[in-house]
Image (cartoon, rainbow, N blue to C red):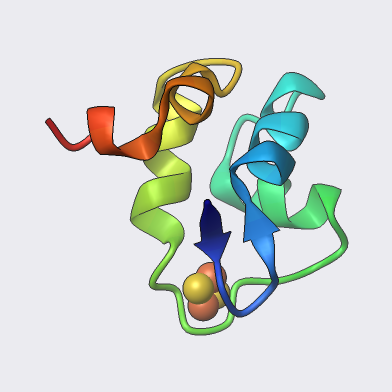
Length: 66
Ligand code: FES
């Protein structure tokens, strides 16, 4: 699932950044050498960070909003 359309970041890429130690949204983008543009994905990235090590991404984002 695409998380950030502007930067073509999917769940796997966000999870990769989190697993590599990204502790903030900014660090997730920085890990991939991009910057947030429209900002519509920030809440989703933040939720994935709060699950720790991207666990939410492994189980699907729909579960995060339940
Ligand atoms: S969707 Fe991520 S910056 Fe636009």
